[in-house]
Image 1 (cartoon, rainbow, N blue to C red):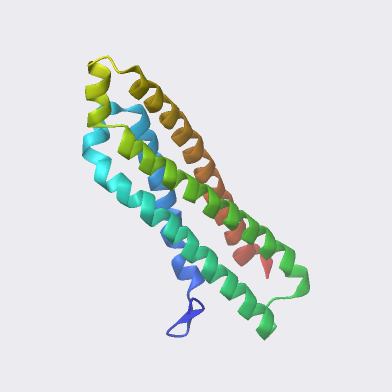
Image 2: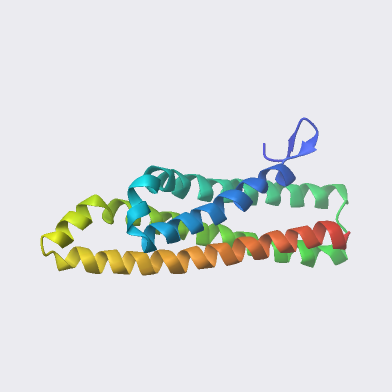
Length: 165
């Protein structure tokens, strides 16, 4: 299912979605955590991205696994090239796991930090303020890790394509 579309391998097509969505999710999450006045403007888009980015990373991973397996079956991948692809795969796995974590933390941030928290803090609620700080810090760490791993994965994949073979 995730091997080919009209004779074209699906993985090179699908990898472009997480390359766009994961950094966009990371940057908007950081903006949401750090800049309160943008929260009402990006709230819904951020919640949507928190779901779409991990799905795009999952589809890229699954299509990459299918692409690798098919290349091994056909003999397109030489044994000395396997470690290069396995490195790319392991980085892709880390990207997926970190993006899922970022998505979960971002959804929690959007749900718990916003108009209700601002009203609660204004009325003297300190628990809301602590929750806002904790979720903001977690989201910044998750955003940084996701951004790091999506860049590393893309770099390893591009090197495998253009320098490998």
